[in-house]
Amino acid sequence: MGDRAAWRVLLDQVRPHRRTLLLGGLLSLAGSLAGLAMPLMAKRVIDAFGAGGTMTGPVLGLSAAVMAGALVAAAGRFLLERMGETIVLASRRTLVDRILRLRVPEVDRLSPGDLLSRVGSDTTLLRAVCTDALASLVGGAFTFLGAAVMMAIMDGLLLGVTLAVVALVAVMGVVIAPRIRRASLRAQEALGEMGSMLDRALQAFRTVKASGAEARETAVVTAAATEARDRGVAAAGWTSLAGVGAWTSIQLAFLAVLGVGGARVASGEMEISALIAFLMYLFYLVSPIGQIIQSLTQMQNGLAAVTRIQEIALLPAEPVAAPAPASGGAPVGVTFTDVVFRYDEDRPVVHHGVTFEVPAGGMTALVGPSGAGKSTVFGLIERFYEAREGSIAVGGRDIRDWPLGELRAMLGYVEQDAPVLAGTLRENLLFGAPEATGEEIARALARTRLDDLVERLPEGLDTPVGHRGVLLSGGERQRVAIARALLRRPRLLLLDEATSQLDAVNELRLREVVAEVARETTVLVIAHRLSTVTGADRIVVMEAGRVRAWGTHDELVAADALYRELAATQFLVAT
Image (cartoon, one colour):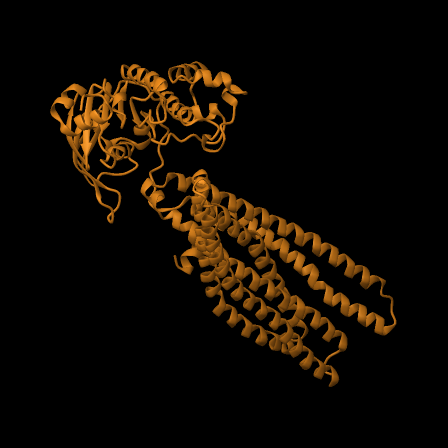
């Protein structure tokens, strides 16, 4: 994204708050005008002192101007900062909504740590732009203009000397600003990479400890942190150079005005009180320059943040789904016809013309060696991914013709790793069906044999399960995921290795549950343990991205060598 596009996005975020920005700017101007009265008041005090008159009136007026200016300026800054916080809230809400609506392939290419960095640190930089930078820029600009007008009234020649010095610094700022933005963008990208490395270690926390890899992972994260530090130092170097320019402008302008003004006082062309007042106005003119340069520097950092935030906004996302109708209803079947799929252009083909049919009602199983493409079938049915060729129909209707929300509302999906979210057990059960009743929850718990677990938990259903369900066993997490899917009353239930973490007793019980559910809806199950699917109505055998056979357990044992071999290795048939 170029500078113009980034500025346009930033201005689009500010535009809805233009009235607040205008009011805050006017209050800042009023505060600046009160402050700009101080040099004139000081001139009157000096003149009164020289003439031997009373100074009470001028001093009181000077004090009143200071207090009034401070209060009005504080009110203006508060409005601008509140506006900035509102902008950041809207940006975070939009960014999170966009991330959660991204297409699954896009999220596969990104790392969670980098996404968290964009929502966290990048929007924090945006807040700095919309609060500190914008407030300082508006206030500084008004103060600069007000001081310039007053200095022009007092002495146009000295104002010209001042602006000549300021122009040199402005040119330097124009040259440095793009470099600040580029350096800041690289620093933020490095920070996102560091977050990704740390997230990797935390996601496999127990594996790291079990492997004795703490030192190695620390070194990896430290290397990323060092890179972030180096890029941050580069950005700080350009920022410091901009700050030095601002400071230099103040000193040079002061010396120039002092030299020219002193000569004019010596020649009698200017009063000493007028020179003192002009020098005071000089600081009112030049000090905002430093303020403006610092604000523009912050804005360059903000533009880098806008660039990273906008990168997410430009990624392909799923359409906003209309509110899904309540699930339940007649079971639906699935038909794959000559489906070809690969995850990306540089990845191998996963499905080579896959064709099979899942009848409505009953249980159909997908079996085969690892890497056969079984789990990809579920990703295609859920439309996490789109087939490259061929067609997929659900309920006799092409999957692309289903509204996405309506399609997913009638599916129940239990992933292979059965994720459980941080929160209470009740929140996890209701995650896919928030409108479920207490009676429905109790029935799902009984069917998945979780009612004993609930009785043992100290707070029952309201017991926290820990981050990613760490306080539950693997089998308990798997049953929670199944109960969550059942509460959706799906017309098609997708079970990916639903019994992989269950002991023999619970596996047998769950087989009974699945058989019971299959009498009410369509169940499509992926299984490596053939013992869980020997009673399936139909078994589809996949190998290397192709369907090689289908039939019942007995038919496949008799007719398919691969299935017979799989059954033999699991002691389901004689070797």
